[in-house]
Amino acid sequence: MLYRSLVVTVVWTLALLYLGSVVHATESSLACPDWPTCFGTMMPEMVGGVFWEHLHRLVAGALILIFGVSTYLAFRDGGQRRWFVRASVAGVLLLLVQAVFGGLTVIYRLPDAVSTTHLSLAFIFLSLAVVLATAASPRRATATALSPAVARPLRRWATGAAVLVFMQSAIGAVVRHTDSGMACPDFPTCLGQWVPPMGTHYVAIHFTHRVVAVVATLAVIGLLVALIRVGAPRRLIRQAWAAVALVAVQFTLGVVSVFTILAVTPVSLHTLGAAALLALLVHLATVARMDVGTDRTRIEPDAAPASTSA
Image 1 (cartoon, rainbow, N blue to C red):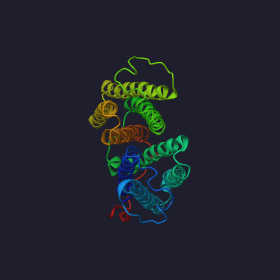
Image 2 (spheres, rainbow, N blue to C red):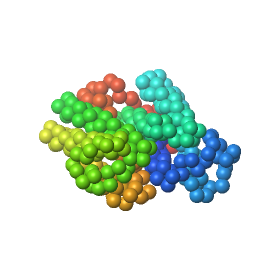
Image 3 (cartoon, one colour):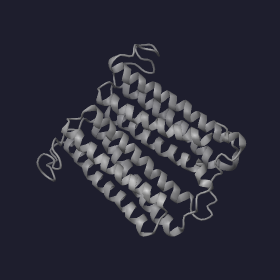
Image 4 (cartoon, rainbow, N blue to C red):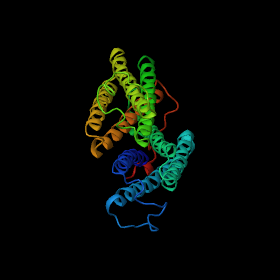
């Protein structure tokens, strides 16, 4: 039950990130001019931009409830997983802080720093939820332990790639909230040059986003190559291939976003793709840290009968 609740949390968070991108892309961020109510009520007329903005709030509220259930289940399972309980409580607090930042974006009319922090916190929570879901997975009870020769490169490359993708996502948040998405209206060059003149901060932000994307791509490819070289289990190599595929999709969506002048669908899917890629890399990094030899940090996933009932 705990594992299922955490999987729902991860999927729900991905949907919320996508929905948040739709809110911004449709310019609905201030469709509800007040917070936490919308035009003074919790049930406004769901039309136009209000539909997207208030739906975003409702889905975010539901996420707090869903993860609250996961935290309760973690407490109920006893003290054998103290780090797990602490991480769950930290996740609840993170969600509450995230909600406050969401309110501040409305109250202060979308300040760039607050809006960027709001999105970055969402990626941090997603990463935490993935760590917890990976740790609670029933598959870990029967999975073959990784040899140090496999775990070391997996941990190094997956962690490095995850950090880079998070940085790339945070920079993407800056691009979004400073309206720098069309600062480079061409591709693969920017303003007709491989290294454009940094005449404005908009160009500098957008170009940095592209440069970090290249570095993150190389890191993900490096992860796949490293796993193939050390003869990693097929399941890990398949997941590394999935990460490379997500990078290719992200690249395509980024290009389409520029050529369609930030159309809602490719821009929103671009955010979702970044979140999915980060989640996959965090999962691999977590596996590398928890499934080595006789790792004593692993928790017994839903071992009690009360925890296995749906």
